[in-house]
Structure formats: C-alpha cells, structure tokens
Image (cartoon, rainbow, N blue to C red; front, side):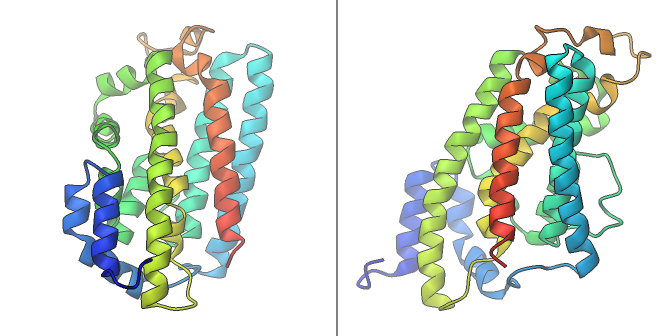
Length: 269
C-alpha cells in the first residue's frame, strides 16, 4: 500500500469499487478492523473439535465419491442425497475448524442454517456475507425462509438447472471480489499486527462463498431423496432432467475445490 494514503481510507475505496452492494460493509469497516485486531489467531476450538473437523471433511470427501459412483449408475436420488450430505459435512468441518460451533451444536441436519448460525452468532460476519451482492443476500434469505416453510423447500428442491448454474457462477464472482478484498486486508493487517496472519474467519471467506451457496441449493434434498411419503417430491422424481440431478457434476466440482481451499488454509496453522 502507498504509505502516503490512509490505509483505512484505501480499504474503503477498494470495498466501494469491488462490492457495489456493500454500503453497510463500508459503513461498518471500523468494526471489521476491530474484529481483525481482537480475534484469536488459529484454532478457536479444543483438540477434540479440531480432530472432529478433519473427520467431517474426510467423510465429506467419501460422500462425494459415493455421489459420483451412484450418478454414473443412474441412481439419481441417492447421488443427490450423498451430494447434500457432503455439503453438510463440509459445513460442519468448517464450523468446527473455525471454532464457530461446538461439537454439540453440529449434531443437527439443519443446513445451511448450521453454517449461518455459526457465521452470524459467533463471528459477527453477517454484514460481510450479505454484502457480497444483492443476489447473495437474496439466496441467503430464500434459504432461511424455507427452514419452516415446506412449499419454499419444494421450490428450492425443484430449482431448474439453469438457475442452479447461475447460482454456481455467482460463486466465482463472489470469490474474485473476496480475494481482491483479502489482498487489501492482508496489507492493512500488516500495518496493524506485523507478522501476524489474518484470522481463519477472514482467510476462509472464499470457502464460505462456495459452501453457503451449495448448502442453500442442496439442503432440501436431505429428506426428499429418501422418503416416498411426500406426494409432491419423492425419490422417483429424481430423474436425469431434474435440475439438482443435472447439476451434480458442477456442484461436486465446486465442493471439491472448496474442500481443497479449506484444507490449505487449515494447514497454515
């Protein structure tokens, strides 16, 4: 950074340029800087939680393998189910690794609410996620509303292929802007805390951009793929042309990348 310019003002300018919907984020930049200065570095959980986080990541990778095999055999409902399970377990590994949630708190199938609970209640990073873009905020809200609304869950489960691909393409856009922001945060943090890395909550934001979108489009399938007692969405409706089925190759690709990125950041501490 140019030493003749206030680094905080420089960062605000970068946020304004790369995050056009991030007025709230820009207004709260002082709070974010305080977060960077005071947040603990590295693991924010005990050894048992750290081990379990890796166990969940390992299981997520096994679910991806199962998904691919079942997809190749055209056993589509079970392929989608294992994809959903892989996303859920990746989220649990993420939340445990960052100390967002305790072992007791991850004993739930409420994805993506699990991740959002950890993000919102434990880290104060709600503004960061909601400010990625207007579309990011919309998807987040849609998934949250579906928690207690069966019709909205059905709507997500039936999401057309083109819409799922559109959501996945937004992962790339969000990650690009996040990385531009990270470059600036790293430089700024060096002036505040020399020789100290940024917290994992910050460094893993690109992973978060992937996990919360994948979770938002996949979570209803946890039930619909397994039980034949819901007339509107049963396993036999998981045919090749269903959006979630057709998008399996793309979704597994994004999840594999997210897991690799998360493991890379965890390996730095």
